[in-house]
Image (cartoon, rainbow, N blue to C red; front, side, top):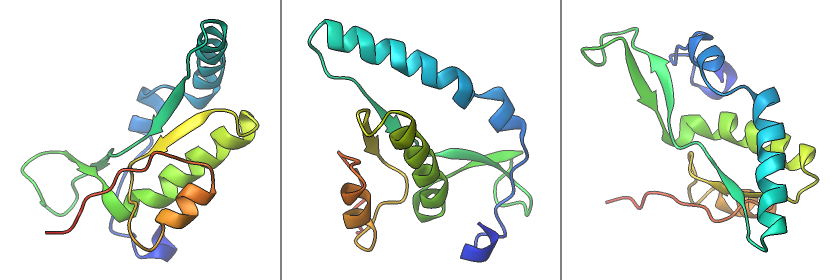
Length: 121
């Protein structure tokens, strides 16, 4: 993230430790996928559209705020890549974390859809 110009974004490991762990999520998603298959339904996951980060420069009158948009793209895509690999490309993944004109084609080409994005005003 630092090399991409987001060196000002600060987050510790609290939110990573406090949230659902990947090693717990994969078996849960496998069970849900099996249940959906058994019932003839589709199942998928949505990759994040926000991530809590620390307030370090008094940006807001709180201790944390939520990162979204373009700065979330590398984190979201790394999770999507792991899920796609671990599920052999069979898990449907939708995306909302920094999609824009410049990267939406890469996101869809990676097998991730639907993709949501904000339209500039």
